[in-house]
Amino acid sequence: MCIDYRELNKLTVKNRYPLPRIDDLFDQLQGATCFSKIDLRFGYHQLRVNDEDIPKTAFRTRYGHYEFVVMPFGLTNAPAVFMDLMNRVCRPYLDQFVIVFIDDILIYSKTEQEHEDHLRKVLELLREEQLYAKFSKFEFPLKEVHFLGHVINKDGISVDPANIEAIKNWTTPSTPTEIRSFLGEPVAQPNLSGEPAGATNLPLDEPAGQRTYGFRRT
Image (tube, rainbow, N blue to C red; front, side):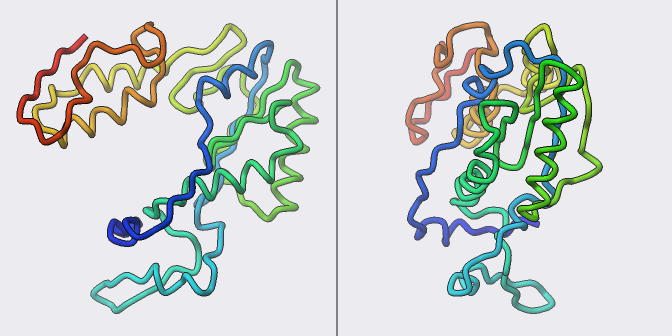
């Protein structure tokens, strides 16, 4: 369930904690041959809201008014706060055999024997910190893993073909809203066209208020 917190978000002082660049995270994977993927259960709901902030999360249903005592989805600072938490929790293993992106954890190793030790350490850490994984999405050990829209194996990293197909099948945007919606997908797929990150020949960054919607598919 996601509440419309747009008005609350307008009044919220933004947390500038940086989310990591996906391509920077993947630089660590050179030489890895064995992988496990953990998705935390209910993600943000594993964090409690400060008592004084609970009333700010109030929402209305036909059954009455309710407040969240755990962090709800839809808050502008939720990704940054959770990313900060996970970086602090996993700090002993980051850049060694763990990649974290918000509530997604990838464990990578050069050998299966090494991977057993790495996996045990991460699971023990999550238990100590009382962070709970979603068993249905717990995948281990794998020679090839789908993670953050990419396919990863010992031979390298490639964009998940399903994501490429989804972009190919998009209808041509014709309004500012549709263009903004489209931008969210390619931006999350670095180097999708094989060009350097940031390179584009699509006129997508014009002010949304301008009523010219030139758009060229490549």
